[in-house]
Amino acid sequence: MAEIKSLSSILKDVNKKYGDSVMAVGVDDLRSFDTLSLGSPGLDFCLYNSCPTRRIIELCGAEGSGKTTTAYLIAASYQRKEMEQNPQSPRSILYVDLECGIDPDWAKKAGYDMNTSPVQTLRFMPEDMPAEKIFDTIIECIKSGEVGLVIIDSLNMLVPMQVYDESLEKKEMGGIAKVLGDFVRRVTGLLVKYNCTLIGIQQLRENIGGYGNPLTTSGGRGWKHGCSVRLMLKKGDFFDADGNTVSGSAENPAGYVMEAAVLKTKVCPWDRKLGRLTISYTQGVDIMQDTIDVATYFGFIDNSVQGSYKILDPDTKEPILDEEGKEIKIRGKKNVKPYFEEHKAMWKKLYDKIYEKISQKNDPNIVAFEQMLGLNINEKFNIDIDAENAEIN
Image 1 (cartoon, rainbow, N blue to C red):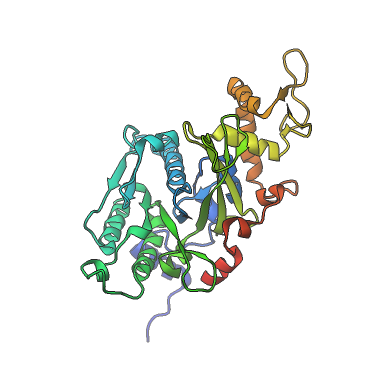
Image 2: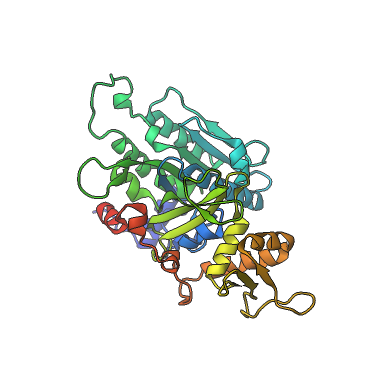
């Protein structure tokens, strides 16, 4: 008769064979892992501060919606964190450039240095490899322990081996879905073990099936199941050089507001489904303007009098006074940002207070952007988010 082992003995044997973290008493919170900022308080707001590490993050959207820019922002956050935590031997970023469209100049405007940062970027541009070989290479890099962030741009460009050498006239069922599903099952545990984060960029496709959401992403349900966070991105309002909203057909818009819908999150409450990011065509990501916008939504900047902006102390909500003891009032929206550019310490105080506030989960005074702005997320993004989650769950 086989010997019956105690639970503690089983735990010890399993951990000895497979690693000390395989079985443990108690369960860690997802938030106990480190996090990476999406690059802006307006975007981080929808995820209660930032996105998790050691997980799979999906960024999907139409052409030009800001998917790659958001990936650059996360990479910039990773570089900063890595230099804080591993300054002597920082781990690299593996950028799988399947679209051959990587842009180091634009990346730098998002704070991501691809060339001179101590946190190296390895550009993997597989020109003649099927998806299976690409995934095997990614897994090998993760297992080396020397890569802390993987960006796949984009998943739609992957070609499975079953169709790689076939004629374009031959049709295959399933496509990339099975291969991607197998990859997710293999890589999920490795991301946790080797402290690595995976970002998968997806292009939106029209759903030709005739039912369900009119927009969809490729890769099947296995990929969606494996993601801890899924964000759908789109262009919102365009603005001119003075920050005023203009038509998308305007002759020379200065930039636009990128909007993000949270399709799925396993790391925080799912009650903030909209995030926002200001993108200037010349300056890149405008974090200062995002800070001003969020501060206004939170009441740290009072714009109740049309055309006038009054700065309030984030702690007391009392008006901040200038050197002469007078309330600071700024006339005209276009003058708000220049004021903070001259008073960086005040901007930083607002920035820090915003991040402190957006991390709180039970503050009744904080409402989601979609409520503040009176927006219907499903209509704005042309998708039924609840139905999307019901489909994969």
